[in-house]
Image (cartoon, rainbow, N blue to C red; front, side, top):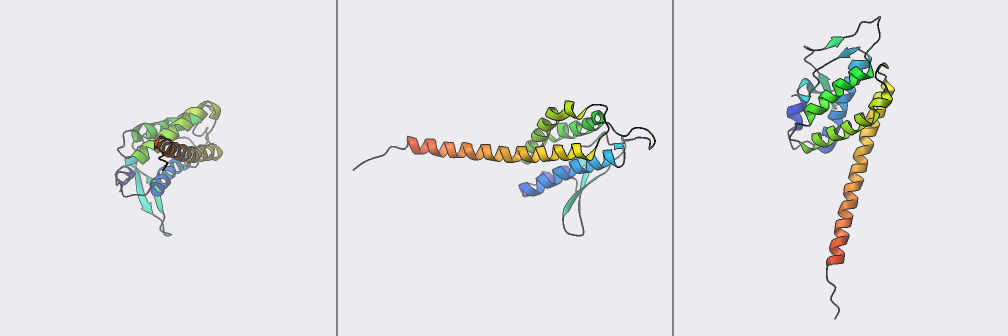
Length: 168
């Protein structure tokens, strides 16, 4: 199955959906860094789900109809080009009906918007930059969970304070 249809199955756990979406980002990074290739159409329908020999789910990219391969002798993929691929994937993911995919796409968009000027437009893509993006996306998830937990705690506290106390 492709990632688009797989993520629409609401029985998938948050951890599995997060893992596959991060793996899609890792696949793009390997494509940009090691293969010196821009996909140009990296929506979730162009990523397939596969299972490794150890039973872990992995994302595979396909449909290279619009892709561009950089010459081996020349400069590789630049951050400006790579971020176009990532932004395209984000834009298509924002159309998803799965709230987990929407949450991931919004976090990734925030990280890309924050770091796009820092990464440099004409600098070659490097693994360290992608790892920084992935760490930041995961950190935002943890912050989001903490904020939601604090909101729940404050809502419970408000209810407790609003409950009348009767003394006998």
